[in-house]
Image 1 (cartoon, one colour):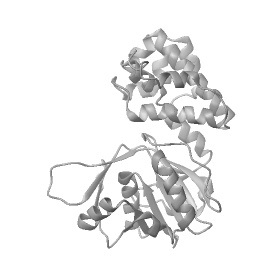
Image 2: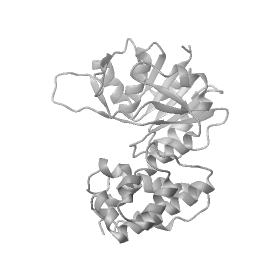
Image 3: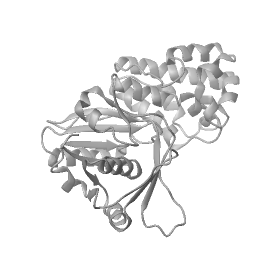
Length: 314
């Protein structure tokens, strides 16, 4: 196990969950949080649970909890988990000002995140690698006298994937209840995970169930237009998206253009999503796609039109 100091920042539930398990396994870990979260942790510690039966309590005797500026000064690895776009500029500034030169930054997004997926350029003198957590972690709210900050992992989407460039850290971050695997072409895996939500996204915008969308020629063609636009932009960015399950996205595009029952087979996600209004994560995906288009100098008219409020539900 590496003797390096790990500093974990980002979405409090996901960051606390990972920081707690890494600390419990013997790593030297500091969880960098806001003052109110630090106060709650110091009062009652962390409680970590998941559907597999995990129920662990992590206290200040195991996991350090400090403001980001203080924590970063002795970091060997900085792990960012679902970093919010609004926080990104501040966090990168703190890393540049306080983390030692040579510190590796692991920027992890979760598959269900509504947060920013596009990484900025890494701070000078720091290497940044990407990762994907295929599950979500939320704070568990329940009427209880327990003062612990209780966070719960939902789903069993497999191990956290990190870029091969993470080197020895990819091995050392794999601990009981938190499997981590090195992954080639991590950008393709991340975008493949995100784009598997495209059809459910269009169904949410239409206000119908995904299976109903596949029978609606207008919305099915709009979804195909969106997917085609996205694949062109990703190709220009040098990214080949790889969904975790089902057929490649290029074949899914062909199926959407043709129509018919085949689509229910090539889009396995339709069986996991009900109808309903668009969620924050759905609209964040559209914004991420538009941002990527701007980065590579390509207009994305379909994405832009779907982001307009008057299109939603129409």
